[in-house]
Image (cartoon, rainbow, N blue to C red; front, top):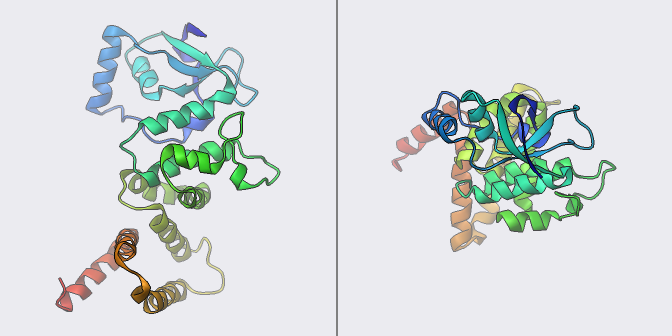
Length: 268
């Protein structure tokens, strides 16, 4: 159903509140969008739902798709906008479809963005993660992965990342831009987050930060000694890329020390 409503009766849906992708209001792109909307209005209705998760404030609707257009319309001084109202059960699927069309995101970034959508509709009684739903009709994690083009394992790596970000917003601020830009893969991010939490004391138990880190390097070296020669061709290349991505997640001082050691060894 399409209708016109006051712009101040629109709130962000809970599923899009934490998603990145908002244009900075001081950017040229946002200013251009606001100017265009001021001249021509919004050419496509904003997608909203009247009831958020079975509830909601009377008289308000919840924005599912069109966050930048909504903000630009408000900046342009519009008092009313056209909206298309959908059922609440369709909201996660619509948001997922929007992610599918954002082809500039890499697979790791898409997995990271899609995870909260599935997690939001997961049964609260501890049901199998494999049965995570993304609409009123259950869609398996495998189907979500196929639609966005990434592996099931990548999806659950995204879950590990979100678990850390939930308790450590400071780490989300540090790592999220690197995930979305493709600078760091989810596997390397999981390792980097574990290191960051260990060195800042969040997950530290009996061992000192120094011991935790040196033990990690010892275990890593052991695995290389035992398994590197068994790898061939593309597998070696994949490990090299993952290792390079992991190093980028380490503190800058460590990266500089590695570069210095390589140069001193005559391998620069």
